[in-house]
View 1: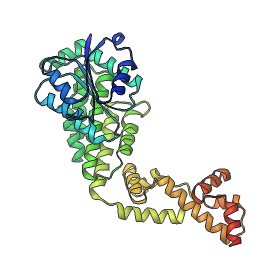
View 2: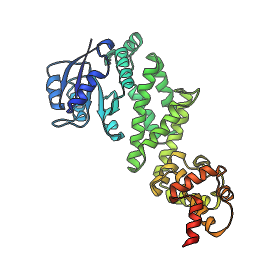
View 3: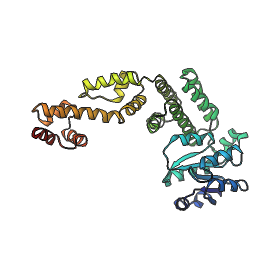
View 4: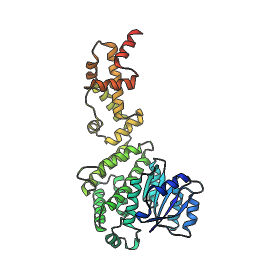
Length: 358
């Protein structure tokens, strides 16, 4: 049985974790529950555990502080999962520096936790002195940190040559240790958190959730190319370009051009992807600077422009609502009316009638 310690200052959370899954059936035994990081630390000075789940925010000592302390003091090499109610990747970035395996948001998802426990059971703890042979013989997941850090540095410096070489080195290393889904997932998760951190360092106001979506879309979810060497190289070049756009801080000039484009062509089928291609801007970056300036997505901004134009037409013409909807870019009149109500608070017909009565 693998020994587990649960650390949380909320008793009902602790009880929920204890009852959420059948720990014994998965090969685990909960040997200790602690109400704060300090209590957990004192226990680890005397006893060994294999797996720790700790809340990030606790009195005496937080989960992050506990993780940092036991790693710095080499007190425990247990698999460590941070549990938090905060959707902030800054926490994940801190945690991964100290070999945190996962970062889970409350409420804990049963399937996600079960998957993590199965992975730990499969991979076991890694003896660093013989990680290659152990990985091959027991299927353990290994973090190829040296190769990953080289790749991340190449992306950060927009060094295409080193990006390709580092991506090759990473995949060669993963193949060497017996590449499987667990190994790929662990290494790409590490890269993901570090890349998000690079963007945040350049601009603290960037939408971290949007960056995550962009990374997932380009690294994990491409049909037929998931996790391949070639796909990773393409993504690395794209993300390097994104970081370069952040550094250039060209938001004002780009947005001015796009504002003009929307003003003159709002009825056309405008998309963020097409505009980013036309103005040579990374689509993820364009979406972020749009949200930063207007406090809304490009799609919502375009909808607002169209509805405002339609409102003006309602007051200045006798055109039918169907025709006005078409003029501002909506082929579906019902959808146009729905959006009009959302923004103006009444139907187009009522808006026109109210104006006539005033």
